Image 1: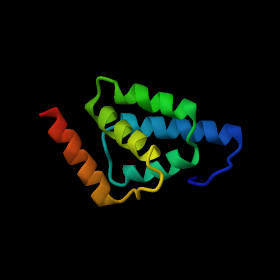
Image 2 (image 1 turned 180 degrees about the vertical axis):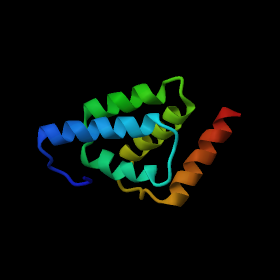
Image 3 (image 1 turned 30 degrees about the vertical axis):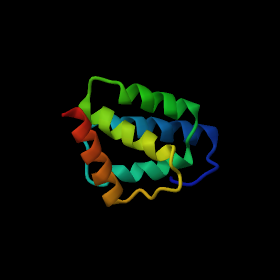
Image 4 (image 1 turned 90 degrees about the vertical axis):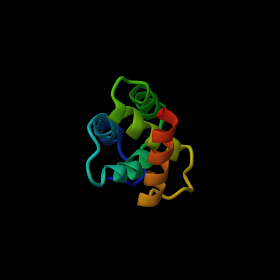
Length: 95
């Protein structure tokens, strides 16, 4: 799934999948969907993620914000330490 050059119908379904994942409560390995998001990155995905990042759901705000942040930093690895550091920074910003 996390490869470039999908057919448009497949790409659309993968964008839907990423959007669904960021709206639900975080589950183990959800951050792995960043690879899929990077493979299908486009204006539609980013606008959906931006809406999620501005939603009333704290899960969606956190997760979508992280995915957007990493989309803007393609050279940054999506590893547990980066996720934990980002979440800690977000939590600190909310206090």
